[in-house]
Length: 222
Image (cartoon, rainbow, N blue to C red; front, side):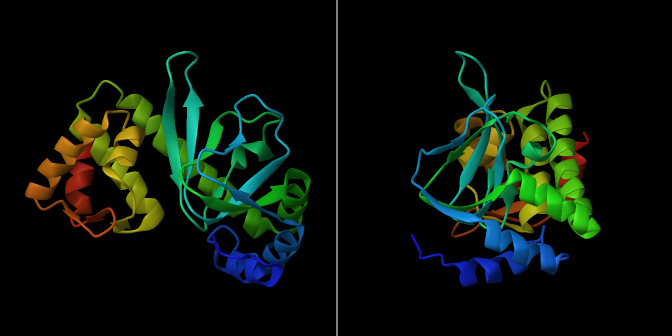
């Protein structure tokens, strides 16, 4: 893992989409951040634990999951470098989900109180937080409404959400896409293979490339 010192974190925060519109807040949060290494499998928080901080991913990959008692868990989101996560901590006193490092990662931990203070000072930051939470909530509502629909429809909806986050190039595994779509890696691979044959997506060195977002939207709405 790379060495993350304070000036580098400050520069990185200036490029984080959530913070780009609020440079003063980005600098203040970089100063308040606590840099932590999170080896693969590290639990950054557990559902139900008191919410005291949130994070920006500097390096690696992080999964957000909802535990299902003794029946495992469901994947809610995948975070890549530059993304904030744990945002529900701003509105809730307890974390609603488990958050775990999917691979060796480095995170910037931000005190909840400091982020709330910066949101009061910077309306652009408050709007960006609301927009980010809104997009994630809309995706979860879509997935709930599609829970009984065919796997191909759920995979299309997951791919559209990921395209909205990352652009045309999606640096995720088929298993991660399947988890977001609420299906098995095998079922996701079959659905993605059909999309590849139709020219809707294409394989890349790492992940997938969305070639025809309009076709994905039609499939997700079918």
